[in-house]
Amino acid sequence: MTLAIALNFNQLNALDLSSVQTTIENLLQAGTINAHEQQIRFDIDYPREPDDPRELSEIPEIRLWFIRLDAQYPWLPFLLDWKAGELARYTAMLVPHQFSSKEGIQFNPEALEIFLMHKIFILHDWMQQQGIPSQSRLKSMGQMFGYDLEDTFFEMF
Image 1 (tube, helix red, strand yellow):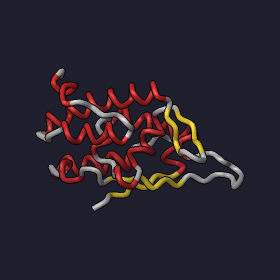
Image 2 (tube, rainbow, N blue to C red):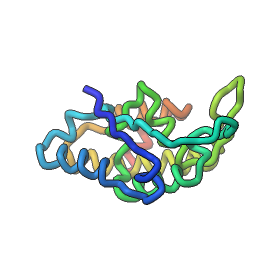
Image 3 (cartoon, rainbow, N blue to C red):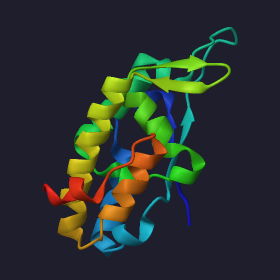
Image 4 (spheres, rainbow, N blue to C red):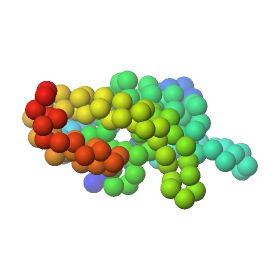
């Protein structure tokens, strides 16, 4: 069951994480965080002028909110609905990129690699603490961004 978290202009501009905090704290208290793997999505309501061509990930106020969110919950990618594009959108909020009409989003390769390795290390440790098998999940995450992580990589830590 997908959990939609609504975000509005005021929340984003005030860096208000309360809607996410409430959702995640409820999952943690109920002991059901593991059961909500890849089930969270964000419904972002951020009014723009009709002639504003920017994507949401190009709006500084929205990006700043996601940076704050990532600082609070660095393991959040575990909960994001990857199939619905939430992991890609979340990454776009945190990693420099360009948009191409033919190829879609093009991440800065070095920045994406740093982001991905950072998330792999964070998620690996967090999943270990939660008792969740991590290697296949983390390999899948890497593949979503074009990286094939070898089994030997995981033996190093």
